[in-house]
Amino acid sequence: MPPLLNLLTDIDGVSVGHATDLALGSGVTVIVFDQPATASGSVLGGAPGGRETALLDPSMTVEQVDAFVLSGGSAFGLDAAGGVQAGLRSIGRGFPLGATRVPIVPQAILMDLLNGGNKDWGLHSPYRDMGFDAFQAAAKGAFSLGTVGAGTGATTATVKGGLGSASAVSSSGLTVAALVAVNAMGSATVGDGPHFWAAPFEVDGEFGGIGYPQNFSSPDTILRAKGINLTATTIGAVVTDAALTKAQTHRLSIMAHDGLARGVLPAHLPADGDTIFAAATHARPLATSADFMELCHLATLVMARAIARGVFEATALPVEGAQASWHDRFG
Picture 1 (tube, helix red, strand yellow):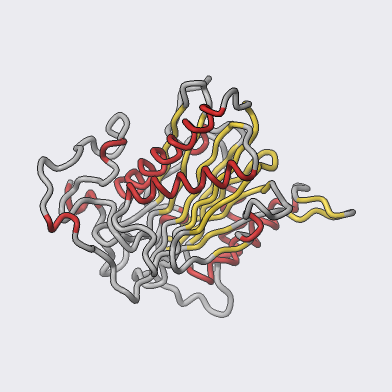
Picture 2 (picture 1 turned 90 degrees about the vertical axis):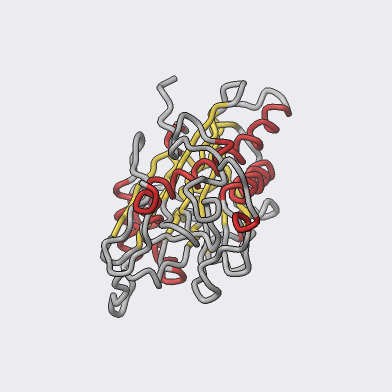
């Protein structure tokens, strides 16, 4: 087994691509599966935006997807999935319906329209083209984190948000990994300091290695939020190489939401649209029910870690009044 990159692409058969526009202050990230992957998802935020999310319900007929899309742009960003569909269709991918194929591309969007970037794009939004560009850029191996792709315009209540990823291997050799765009209404950091809520789960100093503060005080846990008019949303995916049913991938997405709640305080607010997808590539069988229990546990941990990494790796947008990054504030 090759060395882990601590990224979603540690899952064999998974590619990730970004389209990033720093002047726009937004971007798109696409997750492409070499073969259709069994998939589901769950939405726990109060203000979600998405495409093809209803079919991810375990009771719905279609069980597999070709790709996931994460995008900025709020509702305008929903155009991005069309660009990814175009790319998939050009290579013959998609759900077979008679003589044609329809690529299945669920998408979640986050709100980044008020971050200072230039959103005066004219008649048509740029997101369809950005979706196609992200698809064209999708590759295996290492990919960038922080202010890239869907994390480009992301913010949080305290410091700049961004795109993060993390992976883990179970005791039986199954791999699970998360990718997330952290645009939370709440905060990934404790109080006004540099410490991450996800600190207990950190591996090898991946987000600074500074642990928890020595002491907690009441101000550390008070509500820190962007403001009621600045809707947010943390969106992401958790993927495993295990062979899971659609119902099991649904449960995996719920467990990943547990990681979101451990990485951001508070999570799932009325103005968040927190949405997590889950997928299984079926490369490795589950030997026992305990294997799946451990995957659920690890899905929680990798999502919390990915959230902290996304914030830790972010840089401020090059626009006037942009939110400072973690490194800007804490060095």
